[in-house]
Image 1 (cartoon, rainbow, N blue to C red):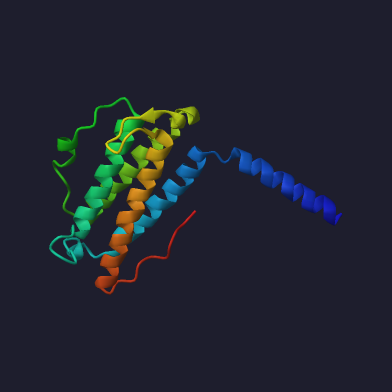
Image 2: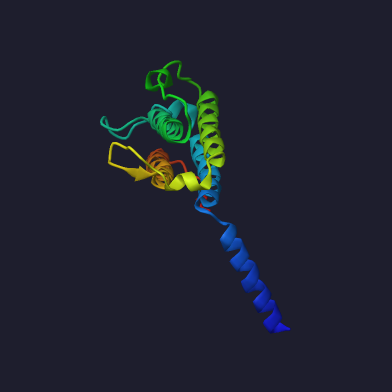
Length: 171
């Protein structure tokens, strides 16, 4: 009986692993990344959104806008047929914490939908990138890595303001 249970577990584990494509893995991580970043944004009081640890750093608010801009640039340029308008991105930026969080949520959701609609085989295709030819899979990795990088900075901003960051959300 024990051997049958182990065999069943191994077979079901193998089946699950075969269904977990790079795209599926990205989408799962992207959702968790969104939830974690939004929790960090919610932790910072609105009157501290202008906080920056040094003059050469971006403020908390600017970090959030920068993350959003990068997501939309990569998601639009490499996973849609739309033209990315960098100037439009900088216009009519919201001031309130609630509006900024809504804008971030919208950007995460837009990227999620674009990747969800991308054919798995398209991730193998190489595209021109300022750092040389890169596969679309590498662009997915960059999307997540960039959010992680700046989210780490935002955690430091919280700690510098004696605000306990939310518990880490991974996979």
